[in-house]
Length: 331
Ligand code: NDP
Image (cartoon, rainbow, N blue to C red; front, side, top):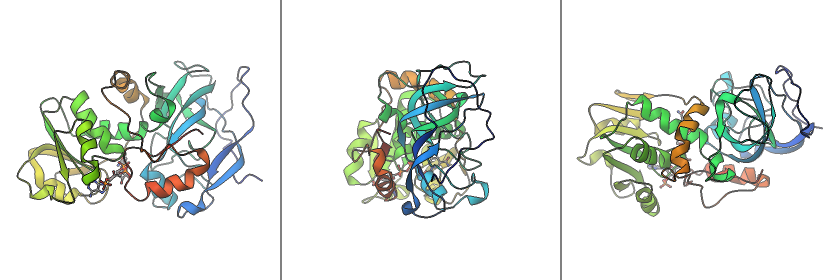
């Protein structure tokens, strides 16, 4: 028996001839806990498609630290009800469209982060499933130059990188220090700062084996955090982007009047924290940079993990040592 039944609140809409089954395979958990609560359920109801939504046959999905935090029950109070099919990031094929959908049609290849708010009422039926329903406005057409696995790793991380840079008022000619430059978010902050915003100088931190990667992504300075403390170095930056949880140290190296973006952990003035909002128009805006190869997806070389190995993939992500994105493909 399936542990999950689809929400009945979203109005189902008529479809064309597409042959979507009634049930699907999905990873799900009925209680909060470590990765062992995840079970592969062979018969989860395929989610109903709301009038502003599309149903996507997921080709690839990606994991984010917030999936782990959610599964551990860290934001129970605002989470969707259990049981949960986790997963925010996906790339796949549109197989059904709601009646109000204007810009997408069956057969379109899309990618996106499926929950507009990550912490407040995220979707109960996420992307670690064969099908997921998502609002049209949260997805964009997949750049043709990248495959589904590469695309799946982008949405939440690139939207976070973009929103953080926007909120910090980043612009051409400014300098930036990226703490955690080799992670899912950091690899994209480096590239957006350099390629999209025209940074004058990009510095980033990582451990010794990852310094070359930082350089290859466009960092002018790669700081080995196992050998040097960035907060003791003389250089000051217009913006510090903290993807590690070092907010208290980060504020020591920002210029007077500069901004410190903090994604996790403690924050001291003038630092600020925010939580990413999913937005397909951000993906559409960045698509030309992806198409041109100016911004490149970084998929962790231990993956992509097949759909059967989601537990192993989460265990790896939770070491905190992933390089770029932990991707699940094929789904
Ligand atoms: P990842 O799991 O991808 O980060 C892993 C990377 O972090 C590794 O490459 C590791 O490199 C690096 N790292 C770990 N410790 C350090 C350190 N002390 N200095 C420099 N690098 C370090 O995480 P994400 O990039 O996906 O997310 C980063 C954090 O931001 C998470 O806590 C996440 O929950 C949060 N987040 C918050 C969002 C928001 O909206 N507020 C949105 C997205 C993410 P190495 O092996 O070299 O140590």
